[in-house]
Every structure is written in C-alpha cells, then in structure tokens.
Image (tube, rainbow, N blue to C red):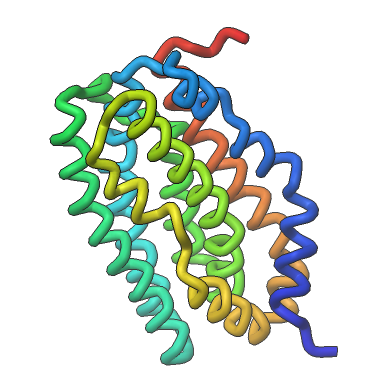
Length: 218
C-alpha cells in the first residue's frame, strides 16, 4: 500500500500532542501576554534568531543540493530564500526594540539549528520535509502570539519578523506530503523519532530564553 503523506503527518501530530502543547502554552508566551516578561527577553530572542536563521538557510540550501528530484530542490530553496528574507525583517525588529539581550548565544536555545544541519547531511528528503512541516505550524503559532503581545502589551509596532512566520503558506505542507510519499520506508521507520527530536529542540529554544531571563520559577 502506498503511503499517504497527509495520513502519516496527522498520526505523527497526534503522537506529538503533549510536547506541542508544552511549546504552545510555554510560560514565556504567557508572561509576554500578561506583560510580565522583561523586555530584554525579546533581545535574547533576537540574538538567538540571528544565529539560527543563517544556519537554517544554509542547511536548507544543502538539502537542495543533495535532493534527487527537481521539485525537492526547489522546495528547499524556496524555504531557504524565505529564511534570508526573514533575516532582513529581524534586523528591523532589533532596531525597533532599541534594546539588547545578554550578548551571548545560549547553546540549548540554538540546538534546533544544529539538528537541522544533521538532517541536511544524513536525512532523506522525506525525513527533512516531515521535520519541517511538523515544526513550522508550532513555531508559527508562537510567533503570532508574541507579535500580538508586543503590539498590544509592549507597544512595539515593528513586528514584521514575527508576522512573516505567523502564517505558513499552503504549498509548504502540500509539497512536503508529496515528497514524503517517495520515501515511504524511511518515513515510516524513522519519521516519529525525527519529529520528536525536532520538537524537543524547539521546546529547548523557548526554555533557553526563559532561563536566560532568570524567570524559571513556577
């Protein structure tokens, strides 16, 4: 039986419900929405993204060069170009805040990008696309909430970087599912493991920023 990409994606998302709930209900978001999050936390967020995004863009470009089909290469290149566009918006976001964070990269806050690099080197396009479409909607949801908090609670108007990620174009998931179907055995054997890891690293990102602000108490 030929694997249905959407079916396996739904099943994996069901299996990841608990960790995804942890990410989307993270205390950092709650504190931001209530105004309790120190403004320097946004500077810390930006500093980590300045490290992550160029590395993500390179990993996506590497995925493109290692693809075996034209549409796979095109898919990863479009995502890589999107990351580079978001980097421009990140610079404007940083300027609008007028504040900095700690000046340091937090290792477990940037572990996501290191795992993406590992996938670029050792994962099949099926596993790579699966990891991306498992992660992107959760990241998108958190960006949307942070954007709202910055505008409504912190009176920050320049949130283009967050707004850019707040909606994921339909083609991202549609094309990913088609690519995943070519790698049926690999996705069925390793897909859940890859998905769990990428989301664990996503959670680590939010935890790392929260710890850097010193607001880890319950």
